[in-house]
Image 1: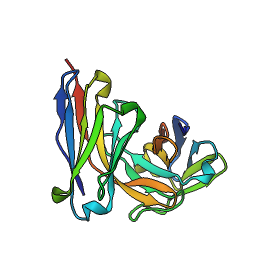
Image 2: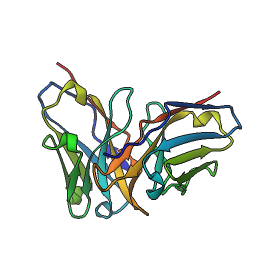
Image 3: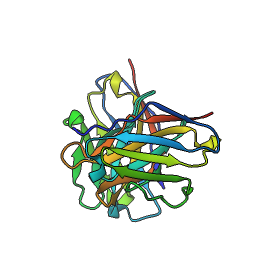
Image 4: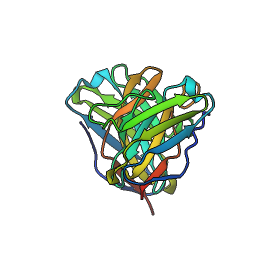
Length: 119
Length: 108
């Protein structure tokens, strides 16, 4: 399973760091992504980290504002988002990546972390 | 960037078949993955690699993919199938994970 950190309330301009702890399988054998969903909107992929190598890949629109890291010793992945605006208000899902026949998909999702940005 | 187009809503009567489409340029050359999201819950993978089902997903859920359209097919629709459904592909040329805009399935 995948357990995410709790809800956050942040001021505009601040940063937020959310976590995703995996259990029940070999953490380093998978990658993790963060996918967010603004209120009433669809799913938006944000970032990916390779659980073994730590290599990262970020959505172009978030380049420079987002950083993913992981701690293999605790099977935890982290995502930090900086310079928050009200448009960053969303539920942030951690999702385990799985390699398919032609690329990757998400086979296990966390329950989500609500991040609210408000003054 | 690669764009996936889904109809905003689809409806079906209980016991009938619902078909949710996902359009994209030459999507048939890619594999398509489908997620079900019920209100207040995280998405759940229901079809991967265009037509395979994860363990625990009913056989009523199936998928096809050809040309410019992929389709999620839900046979013998039940009230519990009412949810939002998202298609997703992996696009190595741009932002890798691309989602469709989602389709709300209403069971009449």
